[in-house]
Length: 385
Image (tube, rainbow, N blue to C red; front, side):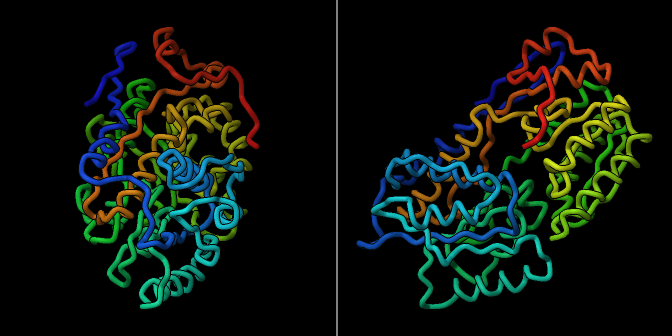
């Protein structure tokens, strides 16, 4: 079931998040149970820290608490550091059914030279007959790519990937291609974003800065944007950055440089998800686009709208609905479901977020009905934490 928001001539199609979530419940139980009298063992793998990863992980833990797999307790706010959060899980989270293994946290720290070593070490452990890990959480595109194969057969849930099909993690929207692999996908999320942005701004040339790699194109949803560009008839101006590297300064400089190159060529910018768009660079990027009266759309979400980009789509309940979805997957797998059997499509309910101060500074007029339809409105610009 879907519903449509109509305002000022614009149409936003929003798919209710409960569709996939409810469908999975029809077939498999989420009741808590032990693994033949023992606790289920869970491990974690990521390419490196990223702000969304912590949110997905903590929301999944909250979902498991709601389902009764973990005892209710206050979840600590450890922003952007999954290693510290995993330490809390392995030592403080109380459960009669689940254990988060303290020695099963793996991260490449965005070091490409170290990625293969870490992945090989983990896969060797997972493929060993004495392996004690029952479920892996693979966070992000790097981790998803490295574990989506037949080199091991440990059940794996892949979270926080922009496009797992385009990046080659899964075979298709309907089929992961491996019995032990599941990757959540929202196939039209980014098309919806650009459709709305174009309907509101009417840009003829859209600027995009992203890393020109398989992962970089996936993060930035390049294929989706190209599809909408062909339908709507606008051009895409591109500038290539560096991301997924351990040199943070280089990532930051590459994004700022690309914005400088794009601004004279475009009449709008789609601010893509990447390592160089962060609390350090956002004030500079916001200032550059505001001074040049360039409308911006944050791929990341409403947090960056609050920090000065013009608009985005926000998660109505934060990551709560996604956390319930992923918690249900964990529960169903521990009740005998194969990851491949579970529905991969999960469309979060999204709402419009606007920054009125930015609109004023760039001279972008927002009609009253558009403002009335927005679910998140910011009247000033907040410095990033």
